[in-house]
Image 1 (cartoon, rainbow, N blue to C red):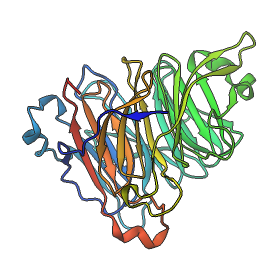
Image 2: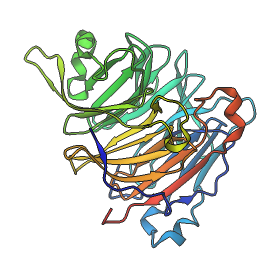
Image 3: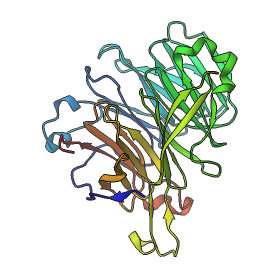
Amino acid sequence: MISNNLSNRDQNSIQAPTTFDDSIASLCWTSSTTSPQMLACTSWDSQVAVYGGFENYSGLASLQQFSPIFQIMLASGEYPYLCAGWIEGGSNSTSLLLGGIDGSVCRRDLNAERTITIGKHYDAVKGIYYIESLQFIWTISYDKTMKFWDVRSPDHSWSYNLQAKPVCANMVSDTAVVGFNNEKLLILEWRQFNNLSRNLQDHYIESPLGPNAPLSCISVTKEKMIGVGSYDGRSNLSNFHQNYDGRHKLDDILTFKAHGSDPGQHGNMSPLKTMYPVHAVELHPTDKRTYLTAGGDGDIFFWDFVKKIKLKTLSSRPIPVTAAKMSSDWKFLAYGVGYDWAKGIEGHQSVHSKLHFRYMSPNE
């Protein structure tokens, strides 16, 4: 059982000046720690905003001055982008990748004035990533396919059918993982890309949370560790490796109830424990014991999963945290609060969506 070691309401976050009329769909930081950090934010009201200037941070007052350095306001009736990614080549050649709910795969140079459509899926794009080692753009879609687009020759693309509808994905370096609505995972390692078409089916594995636990979010590290979250409030951490036959296998580390409230706690009048969906999970890139989860209860937890304790709680209760993402150096946390549709359409107008930034001090 994981216990609470330290808890406090988030007093040190700064709200971004951007106004959102609907919930934040995705957050994506640039991955390089040597070039300027930027954050892309997409929302369901058809906005895309890119924030920068984090390297000039000198205290909370400076965060208050953050405004988007780049913004797209789609016209009424245009489809929103559900996900974003980056092609990083320095400040003069950095491009923003966008995946649309209409299936469009788009690229936008931050110095250009138009968005180029690279291609399309038949349904919404759920994830979009740039594989630097292959110079491919990788996309997954609700149409049950994943595609690869060659950035050197945009007309060249490859498509692979998937077993089920992908609902979450993550990629770091040359390792990627996808979660599906049939409670399975697909682990991909791009160094084996040439064998992908021959043995794709060998890389599906059962979710460590088991059946009847719909997956909501997923994270992977270079050290072959996977974190998953579900709509029933639980989370799991596992290592993975390949057997002698090339198939992937999970080594379970910990499964726990991440986001919930007991009867009488936080206004829970039910005699049963209320569980809230986990909307974000993230593993620290260098500290192999620190883990973040964010959920529909409005809490962001930092865990020490070795000692099985909460290190810190940041709270926006009762407003759900719909997205959360740490910068690549874990100095900044970006998180969106808003409605997560847990109460149906009748609750939609009761919550205003906001984006927050928080500097994580060295002692944290």
